[in-house]
Amino acid sequence: MNPQLLVLTNLKKSFLTPENELLPILDIAHFQLAQGEQVALQGASGCGKTTLLHLIAGLTPADSGQIELAGQQLSSLSEAARDRLRATTLGYIFQTFNLLQGLSALENVELGMLFGGKRDPGYARQLLEAVELGQRVHYRPARLSVGQQQRVAVARALANRPRLVLADEPTANLDRKHALEAVELIQSTCRQNGAALLLVSHDAEVVGRFERVERLADLNRVLVS
Amino acid sequence: MSIFKLAWRSLTQHRVSSLVTIFSIALATGLVMAVFAIQAQSYAAFTGGAGGFDAVLGARGSQLQLVLNTVFHLETSPGNIPWSLYQAISQDPRVARAIPYAVGDNYRGFRIVGTSPELFQEGFQLAPGGQLFEPTSRQAVIGSFVAQRTGLKPGSQFHPYHGVVFSESARHDEEYTVVGVLEPTSSPADRVIWIPLEGIFRMSGHVLRGSGKDFQARPDHEIPDQHKQISAVMLELKSSQAGFALEQTINKQGQVATLAWPVGRVMAELFDKLGWMNRVLALVAYLVVAVALASILAGLYNTIDQRRRELAILRALGAPRRTLLGLILLESGLLAGLGSLAGLLVYTAILAVAVAVVRSQTGVVLEVLAFHPVLVLAPLGVTALGTLAGLLPAWKAYRTDVASNLAPPV
Image 1 (cartoon, helix red, strand yellow):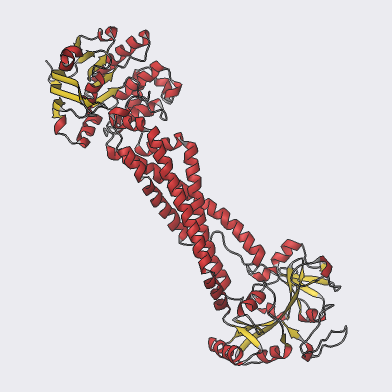
Image 2 (cartoon, helix red, strand yellow):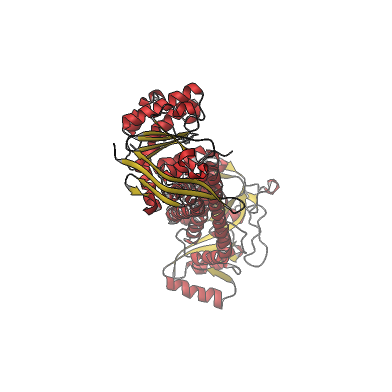
């Protein structure tokens, strides 16, 4: 068994409602992900999938519990150190791709390596070629199809040679054919780059492509109760 | 990809608002530079002396009016002085050179000054093909600006007009011939038509009152000295002590004439009196800069709301908060820096117009490319202040919440 890359222990998160009441969202007793492992996390809309990814990425602080990523406890790190860890260790694929419209495909991919201190335009181009966009490196997102934008987002997520890629409903905006192609692409590129993958989706056909599938309804004690 | 490129792309993405901001900064910086540079150059040009002359002797009255009339060929003459006064001062051992001026006529608005050929011994040079006028002929030597504007050249003939303001109906019968054009001197002399002193005395309609009684010169008859009168005498003194002594004698003890000495001091006093105007102009320029800086602040501050998602994406990719702060400050610095550079073009354009106006109105030539510390300090200062104007928007970017801004607005 590979050593654990991500370990969640007694992780809790709640939000304040407009009525000033605490609304529990997540309560996960234990979850772990090994280096290079690919896991699909299935859950319905609004069950806390995105919040969980934000917690793992250090974008939102947990109320309590532990998140150990690449051997480091997120709660013990300063915000700057969490930024640094995110820039060097994580790749993030968003549901809406979140490409910067003013930048070309190549520049968007280069952006993925800007804050990790590993600037390598050759590698960025190589990634775009790997997702079959070698001829469109200078296209801005508006000139690319939805499927092509998704591929740029995949290339950007891998640009900083991450150890873990978080994919948040990456196929939600794609039709069936492109959705399955996108999942295949994400899985294969993560595998080729030695990155672990945690993909969250409500789509049964998408999660069916993974060997390990976890249901958030089983993990999250808020939903269980 | 670099932070600089990211900032640049952001500015080009909002190119209309960026260009408007750069333009307003350019106008403000150019205006500040122009106000200070024109002020300094004007002061230097108008107080820098009178082409080798130290003092002006004229009728009893305002020293400033005397200097404006004789050195800058503006204003009207404060009056006339008798020929005897000229003879006395020209023989004074403290005076190195005394040149008489008689004014009161013009040609198409350019002043005609009667003088002696000795004037041209210093500070003037004739253009090739020209010569000085004969003291007893109807000949004229013209300044370079007059030649350029009127088209007069050696051999051209013209009629003088009475008064210092051009009026078609005030034409004198006498016809003068241009015999020489002076090389440019970058001084008010470029706007003058010089004729022999005798020409003014004998101009039709001119009445001489040097003796206290009216006298009109007749052709082919000598003009007795006692009837002659002139407007002023330009004086080159042998020493500054001579100036003190003459001022004492003429201004404080005498009651007939006025000595404007030193010429630069008289003009400096005028500038001092107008100092409040310079301060108002500077204040207006500073206010324009403040408005331009505010436009940087408002422009960037408003775009931060539209860019929250972009900023959140950068944070999600690992950008520290301080990088967002730096990014916005870099953008404000770029706007201010580019605006300041464009301000140099605005400054050049304003100076070019000012130079043309000042030259055509006074003959004084200001230099567009003359160095003044404000040409360095203003762009640097505006760039620094412009960068600081980005602090508030940068702080807003710094505080952007990532999680709530990653999803597109619904």
